[in-house]
Structures are given as structure tokens and as C-alpha cells.
Amino acid sequence: MFTRVKAALAAAAFGLVLASPSLSFGQSADSRPVTIIVPYSAGSASDILARRVAEGMAKALNSPFIVENVVGAGGIVGTLRAQKAVADGRTLLIGTQGTHLMNKYIYKALKYDPDKDFVPVVNLVSYPNLILVPKSLNVKTLADFVALAKSRAAEKRPLNYGSGGAGSSSHLGAELLKLEAGIDLAHVPYKAIADTTSDIMGGRLDVIFGSVSTFAPFVANGDLVALAITSAARSPILPNIPTIGELGYPAAEFSAWNGLFAPAATPGPTIDKLREAAVQATVAARQTFSAEGTYVEADSPVKFKEYIGREGQKWEPVIRKLNIVLD
Image (cartoon, rainbow, N blue to C red; front, side, top):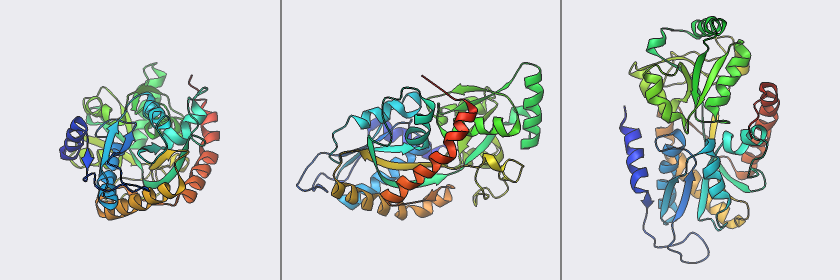
């Protein structure tokens, strides 16, 4: 079950350069590679996506691609690296609802503007999260978990949850469940949700919200217990896991997403070529994504921007209600 994660870690250790530097996708020949910055760790859902898409884009554009993990501050460090890059199409960013939506509502002094500093290239994929607990917690249902959380809070020993950092779907999913179920959970942030794996399996964490693509194998092998999935419909690859709405919390439904972004001043024709290659690469891998519980989106930049706007209208009042504010 660790094959995919090991492959990602190995690729990260040595970098990932794909295709021969024979022809630029721009106006003239250029041997420089395109770097896709992933602001999360190797083995994360964003990282695996980036490497898969980079391989397809390298073939489509006949240009070398490198995937670089720049980790820290819930995705902010890598996003700042991309913000400062030359806007020539040679630096791209895997952005998420955390980096390009939630952070602007959570941080009082965010050092980048998601709307002004970046241009959306394409919304690549979306995926729900699983609510996961270790076997040692001895709960089988979400109702049991909520009851345990309430009893532990009454004893001043709240259960904890791990996340991939402030603004991540793993963070906000847990906070939303707290709000809807009326429970208390202590937040333990990590650099990335994949970094919680050993601690959740070892029982040092009580619950995490982890992507289907990353954690479904652990559920299938019985290493972790999935209490619910956060999508509106059940996942085809885990059909026995109920949705959070089925279990009485429809307001806690959500799906995370990963998109491709470029620095704001990147020329339009370059964006068009990058989008075409990214869509081709993502659609070509649709079967693989589907087998992992991930949904291919492949929206146009305009539709992607409109989608982010709608998501902002949905999440801003929720974040204000949750009173999540960071410096």
C-alpha cells in the first residue's frame, strides 16, 4: 500500500525532470525546465497529482518539467516562492483551497494576494476527505466518535486532531465538524496531512481528515477506521463508507481541490498553452484518478476563477463564525 507514497518520496529526493530540453512551448527555443512548485510534502495528494500532471505536460509540450516541494506554514512558503518567480511560464504552482481561498480569510497579514498575484491556469481535480480514526480509539461510527468527544471534553481531556496546517481542508473540515456536532477537539498542525500518518496509526492522534487518494489504502487494509466521507455522494472506491450528510451533518460536506496557477503577469498565450497541456495530461490520467477516488475537473481559467469566487462566498462566513484568525 506504500508503493505510491514511496515512489513520490523517491522522486522528490532526486527531483523530477521529464522530457528532453528540445523545444520550448513559448515563442523561441529554450532549454530551461518548467518548475511546478508543490507547497506540501512529498507523498501528499498535491504532490502525487503534480508529478502525474508534470509527466503528461512534459510529453505534450516536449519540454522538461521539474516538481519541487517547498514546504512550510500550511502552504504559504511555497506559494511565496511562486509569487516571486519570473512570470514567463517557467514557474507554476499547485494551489489549493488553503493557499488560494482560506488563507486570505484566516491570516491578518498574508504576504501574498491570491487574487492579484496569481492567474488561474486550470482546476485540475477535486476530492473529498475521509474522517479517520485509529483502531485503538475503539469507535466504529461517527455517532460513537461524537459521543466520546463530548465525554472527553466534559473531563477536560479533549480529543485531538491532526491537520496539514491552518487553512488546509484537513483543518477546516475538523473545525466545521466541531461546529456542526457541538464538540471540542484540540488542533495539532503538521506541515502536511501525510505527515500525520504514523501518529494517527499509532494512536497519538485521535482523528484526521485525510484525502481519499492518500488514505483509502489504509482503510482498505484495516489500518485505519473511516467513519464518514465529506462528499455529498459515497465514493465508488469505498462504497460502504457513509457520507457525512447521511449521518446528520449535511452542512459539513465539502471537497478539497487542487489547481494550477502561474504568476499574475504570465502572458495569456503562454497560459493557454499550459492549460491545454495540463488538461490533456489530467484527462489522460482520468482512470487512474478515478481509481483513487479523485475527480477530474479540467475547468477553463474563467470558470476556475468563478468557482473560487463561489467557494469564497460559501467559506468566508463559516470562517468568521469559527473565528479562525492567525497572525
